[in-house]
Image (cartoon, rainbow, N blue to C red; front, side, top):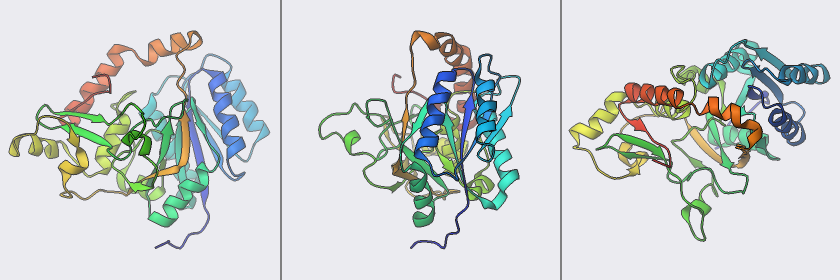
Length: 305
């Protein structure tokens, strides 16, 4: 049943760190494909190029729509997103409808904002996860399967498939559904923020979204210890939802909304080589992975592992 709904403030947030051309492209997609009342909040993580000059010019041009927050140092993904969420909550409070988190290599498609609001209004969603696609149009992950776990070997991954004719991956995301996955590109409501809180800042970059998902599902390190020890564990990958078997109560309702379409166009060209070397620094990723394992008792792995 559709809930009573009063229009509130919609916000798109973006973390920036150099890569000005990507930020310009992301902003253009937001301006082109959003209602005029959607506001933008940026947090710059210490850019050394012309990004901050561009953002300040943008604020001058769209004074009522744009807010620019800055940090002299790179706060990382988790802390940066938390800073934006804290700012949005303090400024708008319960008048906030949702805040959508994006990286500057993301592009929103027409209707994304109406789809988020629709999922909140019609499904009672407290966090809305988009259909995230690659530049070639293939889904970023299998929304039908979501998280997969090898409880015996204590590993967790997000299910991916190679798209193909008749593949479940081709079908994933056709219908709106309740999910166990929160991506970085998710829209969070004030209700979600109050119930669940923000990101674990032990993750500077890597696995912060996995961690927030498990927190939202009401899981703890003890949950995984129970599955791996008391149940004897199960070798091989099965869905986390199947393993949970309705035994825990999520803190908030996650809705996967396929009409909220976002492209993640992560360029690996020569132009961004230096940025990628920092972003994918082995030491930083290992620290985040080790932190996740220490907190949750399972080790997150990528599609390549």
